[in-house]
Picture 1: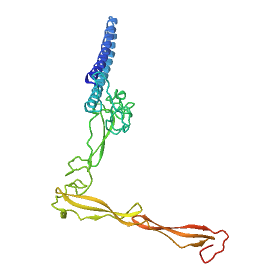
Picture 2: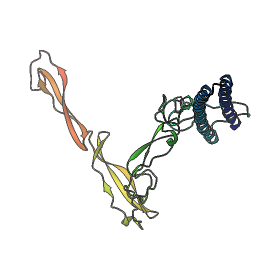
Picture 3: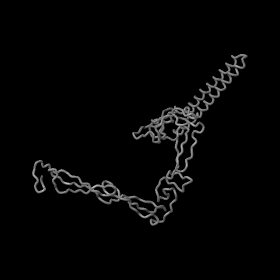
Picture 4: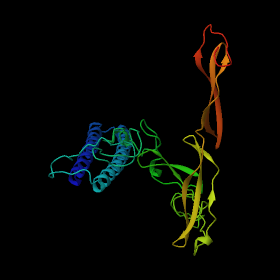
Length: 315
């Protein structure tokens, strides 16, 4: 959508509202002259009309504010979205649709007019990622109307400041509740932090508590290598080896999965009789809580029927 088209729509709405405003004044003059010498009635009529004009003026200001918000949103979208291209100034945007489009992930992808990172309607962008400003016509009137999550009037869009490791919520210019948070690992340096590298790992120059870690000159300045406790993987026992090393004056590390023990042992006992049939004990290996275990189950080898027991081999 071009800037000229947006300005044309905005101008048409304002022109319509001005015509309404002039109509109210004409009615006021008509009442005044038709009242004749009844000055008291004329004054009362003018007072009523003045109140009506005040209400209409407030409504016009509210609509103008919302039009500015809508224009700003659309301008920012089309100025930053490279996926929408037009063949000429009068044509609509031509988009190529992709099977991997995910509406609601906060990324403007091909085929989407918008993507505000949620599945909510009435917030300027529908759950189908199309523009829709029908729910914003009354946003900013200091009343929470249908389709709005909040409305604080002139305070819409004033961001709150959360405490460290806490959250806070404010009402956006689109009358939606927005949550802000501050914590170690958000890749934003706060006054309570010495550093913030966007993670909660130690020995990478910035600790899990967002404090600067001492620089290293060699591997000997870094922690000793260590193994984790054993754990089960594919029915075997493994451990994780963490290897620390110094690089660019920071202690870094690699983690490698190390095989420890094969638990897949299998064996069978000799035949034995049970309930007039031939059985064997089948023992198989398994892994549980990082240790090898043995699981034994009887298995029937032969159904002897009415045969007579002989030498422990047949029943």
